[in-house]
Figure 1: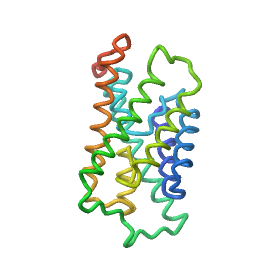
Figure 2: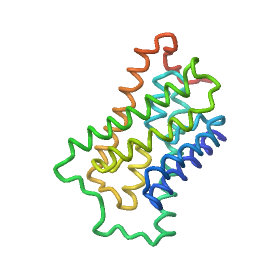
Figure 3: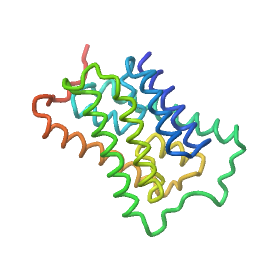
Figure 4: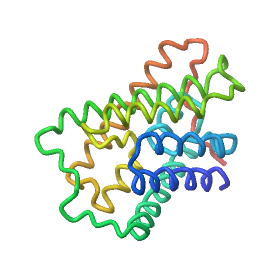
Length: 212
């Protein structure tokens, strides 16, 4: 349970700062410090797409991955509701509508999530970088650069929990949620496949579900 609570907390603060700040540097920094704070407990995923990539990497079981995702989404939704209450945020007429740019937004989400998951897999799950102290900084700055460069195109979720949470408070349009789910999970799957192809010595098969 402590792993799931850690994932809840990390995702909570990530979404809270996304909505109250909106600044890529603040968002990336929040992810960085939450990874340093909780990485030793849960791995510091704070993102269902990252959890999927790490499962495909073989570092987590499916029985762990599903609760991770549930707690991440729950933490994000609670943070979104708190952000609206704290800031008196009114998204009426301000909901991001991708219009006829859905294909570009989809590609942006795939690309950004690929970069994020690829970095996570390489700095946090390989023998060559085991015991390093830079992984939180590397992951946080990946979010910073992707949010800066790709955020204006798609909204820069790169995280299904973020996309769902922002849709709950109408920052994102629900009709576009498929873009974020397909884009984020798709980018994560591609990252895991590329990682497993390149890092042959670290390749692992996802473990089978635990049984009694």
